[in-house]
Image (cartoon, rainbow, N blue to C red; front, side, top):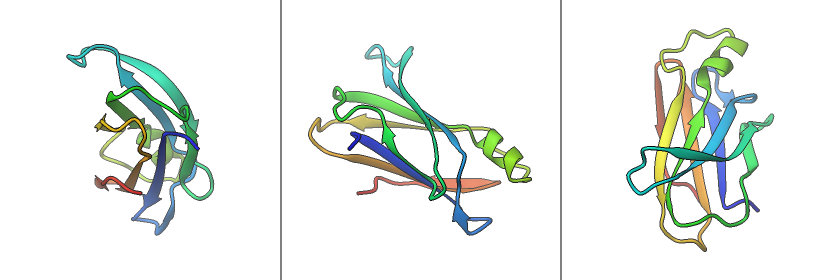
Length: 114
């Protein structure tokens, strides 16, 4: 299993958000002034990307960017946030990191899942 997984739910439509382009990046320097793409994917019919990146990542800051503009356009919704970017600290190299997003056209929330 990938070290990092994600799940996107569309709260406005009450269903998984399928077809959301997702990019996982790692900080290329301690100041986070540049980022290196680690993996890219698209959410499946259940709103999940289960194979986002390798089984092991280096400790440090990472970020996931969700292309919500593409998703909202595909579903006929007008969104306020064209992308959602979540930066997180991968402190435990042995732990699994699940980063879910609850999405609507004018709001989103996230948390560390299991």
